[in-house]
Structure formats: structure tokens, C-alpha cells
Image (cartoon, rainbow, N blue to C red; front, side, top):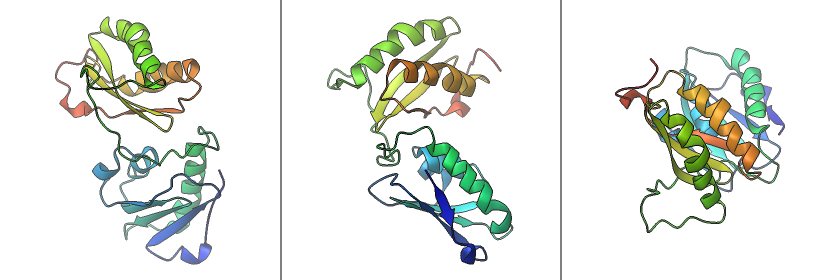
Amino acid sequence: MKVTFSKEQLKDKSLDFILDQAISQKTKTYKVSKDAQYSPLGSKIFGFPWVEELTLEPQKITITRADWVDWDMLAQPLVDMIEHHFSIYDEDVTPEENQEPIVREVEDESMELTAETKPIYEFLEENINPQLASHGGEVKFLDYQDGVVYLQMLGGCQGCGLAAQTMRDGIEVALKNEFSYVVAVKDVTDHSEGSNPYYR
């Protein structure tokens, strides 16, 4: 992924970042961070407090900044961050194609596990959850879209100080190693609601 921007826009409030390959087939605008919680890139960009609005197009990312920052200092670091973000995806994957997962209860008998999702669900139940259970935790499979697995952490994992490390260095690595079509894992847990995490 190659990302560029126009220096002529550096004095503008909004800056366009042009991509050399598509990340979706549709356009989505996010005005607050909560709206972007299911967007792999959007949630990362809204981690910067100066972001006021974000629009993701197939081959363009438009970011609107706050008045108290300047693009002169921000533009190139953002290019580096965006290129690094997409370096984990294969060229034929459009990671922003589905920007909101369909949250479904796995226990619901009406949910149909596909040829792709059933092995993921079974792997989590047979290999990951037994390990998490020793710490009073659990991970629930919610959805799979375009190479991204959406998970929710429960019990001792919800609100745990090591939750991000567990998800990134443990669960995500295990799923990528086991399934070639998994390119990323997204934690959609509201960790602020954790009532009795194993670690603080």
C-alpha cells in the first residue's frame, strides 16, 4: 500500500490521503469515534484527539483536523501509520468493505456457521477458552467479515489490564497461524464495564 497527499492541502482543515489500492467499495463518513468502532482503520485514526471527522472512500481517506494542530507536523506520520496498518492485509482484501459487524449470538441455533466461521468458532472453544478459563475469562466469537474476526472478551478478560496484549499477541497470532484467511482480529469489548477482572 502506497499513500500520498497533496502539499497544497496542508493549510486546509481537511487533508486527502490517496491510496494506490482499494480498501472498500463504498464510502463511509464518521463524525465521532464511537461510529468508527468497527472500522479497523477508523478506530485507530480516532485515537488521535485532534481528529474531528473521517471519511473512508475506496481509494481515499479524508481526515478533518482540529484548529489547534497543523498538517505540517501530522501528515507524514499519518502516511507512515496508514501504510503500516494496511501492511498486514493481502492485496486482494478490502478490509474496510464491511464497516459494521453483524453481532450474533453463537449459542443461537438459528445462526449458521459457514465453512469459514465454524472452524474459527471451534478453535476458540477447544484451544483458546480453556486457557482463558484458568483466569476466569472467556472470549466469544461474534462475527467474521473480509478476513477480520470480531471477538468479545468476557469474565476476567473484560477490563483486564492485559486484555489488549492477550488479544494481539495471543489470540490474534494463534488465529492467523491456524487460518490463512484471517488477517486481523478486532476486540469489540466494552472494557469499561468489566466488573471483576483477574488483573487490574
